[in-house]
Image (cartoon, rainbow, N blue to C red):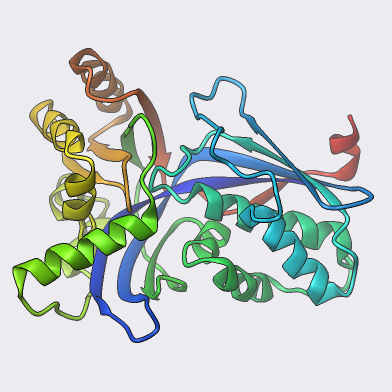
Length: 314
């Protein structure tokens, strides 16, 4: 089984106070974009993970684990436990989503592995695991995994795992500036807490932006650009000051909106059209503010089965 799964960008990431369980209450408006990883699952004598860069991809894969710690491997074990089978599967991950780039590449791979392994081991005519079951398993693996299954555009609350699809009209075009090296999500959240403690101001409970939702519902790209916001951005800029130059360059070159994606260090720039995105990418490349530049559009569907066992065998 082979499953294609998209990256995400957070159009809004509102981070509330630190909870007693160590997590933050979040409101996240997720948006799936056309940068895809592909995860294939085939019967094997034992659970193995192989990782490779997708053809033509600029994604570095050196930091992706190939052990049982890989989120896709953990997903396979969860599905096997639910179905009462041995997790004997060879997982092959082809990556085009930036690694540790704030675009949920690891979570995307876990979502794809959930779908692939469920199709591999479950009864296709009377499946024991529904899509809702897979969403619940995904939430056990990470806050971003359920959205990678859902795709499109959605509002996430709690840790971000409780999702409601958002009304979205039209297609939005993006340029992503990929930095050299990643940022640790726990480190960015810790820096966010440190900066807030130093400021000494109360942290409000997060809420969804009405202006953002209106822009999505009407397809107003200019309004959407003005509403993009990420509460983790100050922390990411604190840990990686060079990102400020990247964000500023995108704004100066005419992006309708600019922000650090998730926990970073990828920076996302909203363009008005596909042609505008192409021009913006060219100008950002000339400005030399990123290691690589990628174009994508959204929203796109979540994890989708794209190949059968016969296709995999070929």
